[in-house]
Image (cartoon, rainbow, N blue to C red; front, side, top):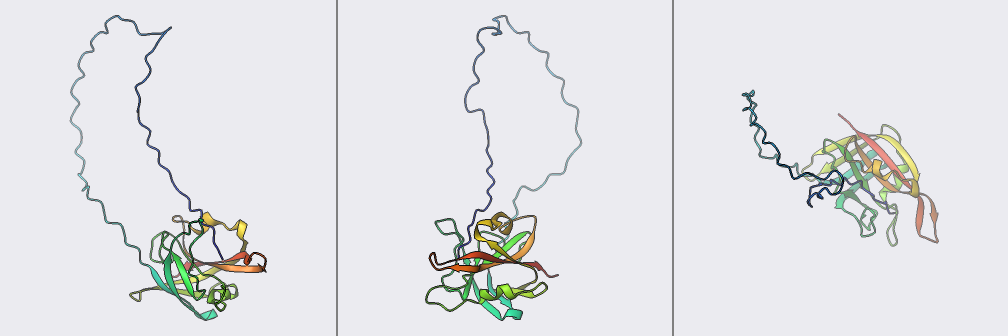
Length: 211
């Protein structure tokens, strides 16, 4: 299973006057008459004092990688490792379906904003069916627990289980880094095409944080 990753990017263009402005010519050209000298402007009146803010930037919060995901209702208890992006632009995934990957360039479960994305293969050659094959059996309200290496846990309640044809996967929504806070679990599903070795759909579980 491959999840196509097209994370949105914000490009900031700084426009500056890199070349001199063209001189006027022809009609409307500047005359050679001397320009009168303007009178000096009066000194500005005193202004109200403003507080001085320290310029030392605050240190960025270090990400807390999840190391385990547990879902008691479907008997899932899996190792989670950080993953990135493959050269083809897909989210990288562990080869073994018994291990899930956390998208390390996105939020972690303890981030204040954005979606935490964890994904795993449903199966793979020379491996048994993976635990995420049971994601389709989840129902609204089932609890998902994600743990960090120090034992800290983040708990979620399943809000939805959706099958998306791979070409219609809402990538920007799933990998959102702001405007939402959720756990997103992804695997493959639907019909299997033996000619390509791929499944037709992605199964996407969205779970909301529990207070």
